[in-house]
Length: 299
Image (cartoon, rainbow, N blue to C red):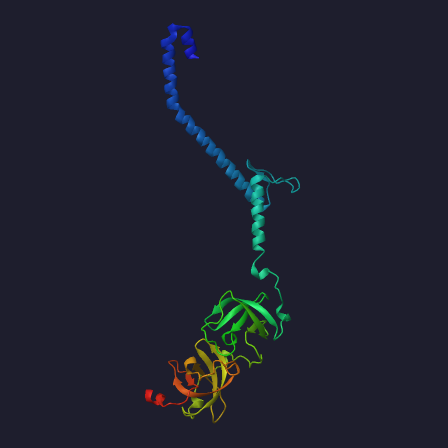
């Protein structure tokens, strides 16, 4: 407009030029301030929208107050309350969390009931854990893992430190279900008859009943349990009272063929052993090998 006025009246040219210069300088100085104000206003609006959406989401999850992005309002009847964008998305998140929380393993319906299991039933299980190289836990679909003892993993004594692996699926048979609904399973074939498990309180490590027996004498023994390093046996004296003494039969002291004999290398299996000495804890050690006189030479 100033340029048009200057073109029509040449006399006003200097004044128009001065005004243009002043306006240009004012625009150059004030433009950043206006821009900053506009940006601040946009940020305020964004924060207002976010806080309104967050408040709407919070109330939507709580199910108490109907809100929208502009702020809270008085409680409304459920039938007339409308969920807007942010609140609806939050409600969807809530539903997903609830559905995820309702699907833990212990809440799932078991594939079978423990009370329905019978000794000898053929089942399939998945190894979920291994404990101290002495037994494995197996998921058989009852909601509570079954126990697969080390001595029940193969026929005879295992040649590997641990014959099964975590995550492996195994064909099994039900060996026992105790009064607490603990299930014991086996991979062995053949007879499933086993003597009762020896409670820890019934283990006797006092070897005094065997003092009357020489190291060369063969003694009756019964397999109590198996570990990766050997077999625990109850040894009985040949004279006097038949008091069982717990002893360790290390796998290096097996006689040839014992590890592959499923009728003897099993809980309840009957073997012949000799006294070999005592370990650092004072527990008796025995052997299945013939006497060679080296025990006396070492002593």
